[in-house]
Length: 564
Image 1 (cartoon, rainbow, N blue to C red):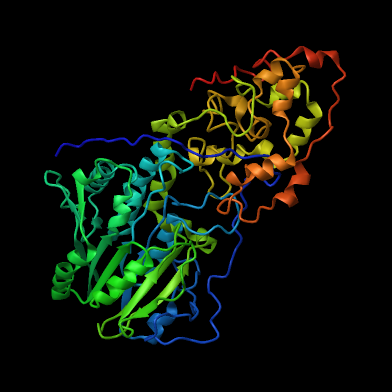
Image 2 (image 1 turned 90 degrees about the horizontal axis):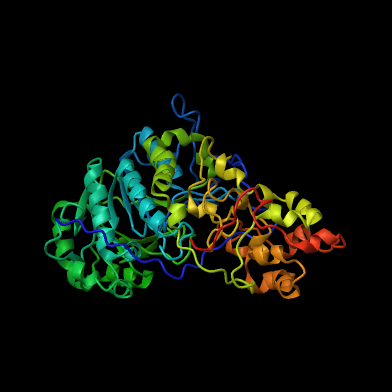
């Protein structure tokens, strides 16, 4: 097969740098939490749609470091319990918590810890993912090149975990349908894992040999139980893709037309049929009721916090499940030896309680740690990041970034105030990650973008070797590139263009571009603004202040040219 590489063009990125708020993005060490959740007031039946019972942890001795048994009540209450189907989905590029705030949820390494602990408990497992692994290449903080690299490493990690199926998603095709499918095929073929993508209604064009990695359905085993897993892709989501070549690679038909034959084949040789619906819950509900043979149906979610309980359909025979976005939860479907025994369900929150067992993640931790960061470095994704002209506020035409040391020559007390904030030290966690000792993230654009100055703009930070004077969150992240003002401080027009007020930042919402719900969920502008205000700290009666700086000299190097 001709392995084409169709690279998507990155346009109109609206990514951001961090602005001056004292909390910064400093990492907080994970706080210990109880391994066993409190039981609910009303214990549920195994025959019910969900299971709100506690984890009922008994202590594990020996190799599991005393951690509590996960879901111990399932094996205790059901002597015929054989194992579980693990469900995940809609990770959307959130392969790990960034560490900027405490108690962040999600992460593939933690997911690997949970899976390994269940296996060490003797559970037989099958794993399936709804899809939507990758972030939007035009909005992701890391930029399109990092989205491609991260997708490859995510696929390798899922293969290492033992996943059987991933649903084909329009989200994962935003890099370009041809490019994504060939990237999937190349990665999975090279890995030699049992993981495949599934879609009953997305049919590859002739001439593309994707039979090994894109199939209508797959089979998986949980002990004596045999599962049949298929998926459908919402045709309207595929039609909305801005990819003129998509239909030359895939034909997406009506899910109802495709599911009948696939379900019949699965019912012939499997005990339990599972449908992954890459579409809204209304679509999943309609298909579940029309094709009642599917016992487990998984739909996409609108929010990160998925419902804790499944929705019961077809007089309780079908469980409609959502696992939420950003990879914060796992759905666990408990299976009994007897296919007539209703499955149990538990939603597991992926939180910092699993960090202490991080070594159990094994190869997954290496793939998503050192190997992913090395891939970013080798591909030089920082340099290829799609930069744009500065346009957040009005600045003098042609102004470039000069760095805080140039500012210091006229504003020493203001710079001293900045040095007392965490913004001045924002680069340090990239060198030594407090959450994961030994981890270096200096080449990860999704982190660098909020820990340096002017990263997304022409003339801003590129790498520490090339632009050392722009590390950390400096003055110009708030005030804009300052070369014109620094060269002629007496120019009233250029000086006015650098001035900023509280109202400017509130209207522009610049702070929350990095202090967002993912990285700083407790951020409050009114609380932190007084801590970083720096009005009237310096006087400007020294005649030398008015002469202008030789831009770049005090910064220890030449500022960016603006041509990158």
